[in-house]
Amino acid sequence: MFKRILLPIDGSENSKKAADKAIELAKELNSTIIVTNIMDQSVDLSYNEQEAKSNEFIKKIVDLILKNNINVESMVLFGSPMYDIVTIARKSEADSIIMGKQGINYSNSRVIGSFTEATLKNVDLPIILI
View 1 (cartoon, rainbow, N blue to C red):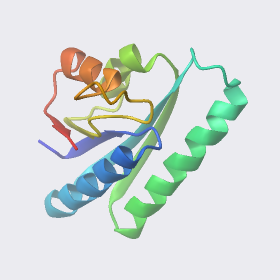
View 2 (view 1 turned 60 degrees about the vertical axis):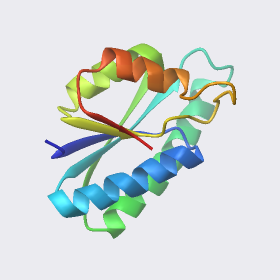
View 3 (view 1 turned 90 degrees about the horizontal axis):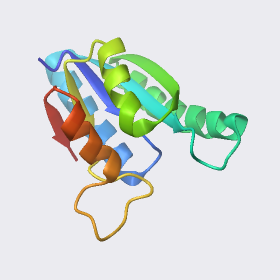
View 4 (view 1 turned 60 degrees about the horizontal axis):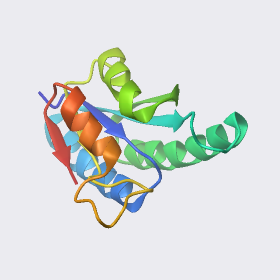
């Protein structure tokens, strides 16, 4: 377990904190980190704009992981984050997930974000929330 850590990111501060924790754990366990972003098809930005933003924050996290001499893979998907996290977890062959408890669009009235809640409900893997 924790040999293939899925790290869903959205550019938020919590994503960065989750990346730091994934790096810490991957160093200890000699794990691979799979950085992923699901570009939300319901957002008003064009595909090209979303892709540029996605690639920008994925590159930052991948570079940070590589600086720590950790194996890293990355995956970007255009779809529905709430549903496609299951697909990415399966395709990536992840055995665990580390993610922020709230994303970039969270509401202060919620303890965890809607994407995090959907992941907890739909993915049957150990999940660490940061």
